[in-house]
Amino acid sequence: MVNNISIEEIYKIIEQVSDPEIPALNVIEMGMVREVFFEDETLKVVITPTYSGCPAMNQITCDVQKVLMNEGIEAQIITRLSPAWTTDWMSEETLEKLRASGIAPPKTKVSTLDPNNLFNIIKIPSQIECPFCSSDNTKILSEYGSTACKSFHYCNNCLQAFDHFKCH
View 1 (tube, rainbow, N blue to C red):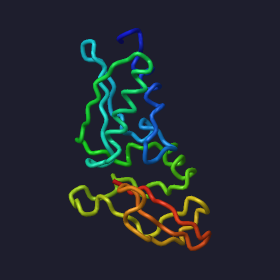
View 2 (view 1 turned 135 degrees about the vertical axis):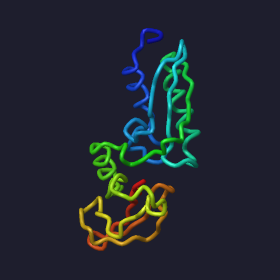
View 3 (view 1 turned 180 degrees about the vertical axis):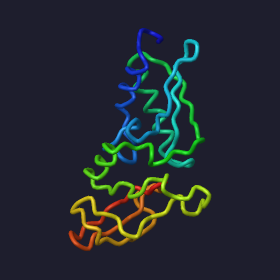
View 4 (view 1 turned 30 degrees about the horizontal axis):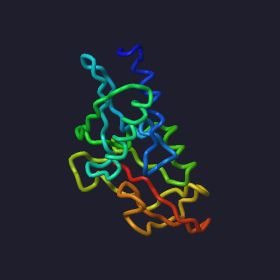
C-alpha cells in the first residue's frame, strides 16, 4: 500500500474507465485489467487488450492513468499480450450487461473449443440469440461489426440489427 490506498481501492477507481468501444462496460468488467500491484513505491497496472491490435488500447491506457492521476496516484501501465485475452474472463453479470445494451454476448465459452485448431478459436455460431427478443431466428450479415471483436447480425423475428461479441 502506497499513499495509504489499497489495491481494492485502486480497482474501484479504475472501474470508472469505460471500454471506449462498449461504453456499457468498464475495463474491469471486460477482464482487461489483469493485475494491479505495487513494486517498491510504483503502482503497476497490467492490461491485456481484447485483441493484440485493439485500436482502443491507447485510449484505455490514457483513461486509466487519468482517473488515477485525478486521485493523486501515479501508475505505470503495462500491456500484457500473453496469455491472450479471452471471453472466458467476462463474468455472467458482464454478459448480461452486454445483452441489456443490445449486444449479443458470446454464445460459447472458449474453453469448449479445440485450442489446437487456431482457425476455430474465433468461431461465430450460425445462430446467435437476439439481445432484443431472445429469438434464435437470426442471420449473420457480416463477420465484422462496429468493431473487430464483434460480428453483425439481423433478427428475422423483431427485425432488429445487432452486434454479437465474438468468442475468443
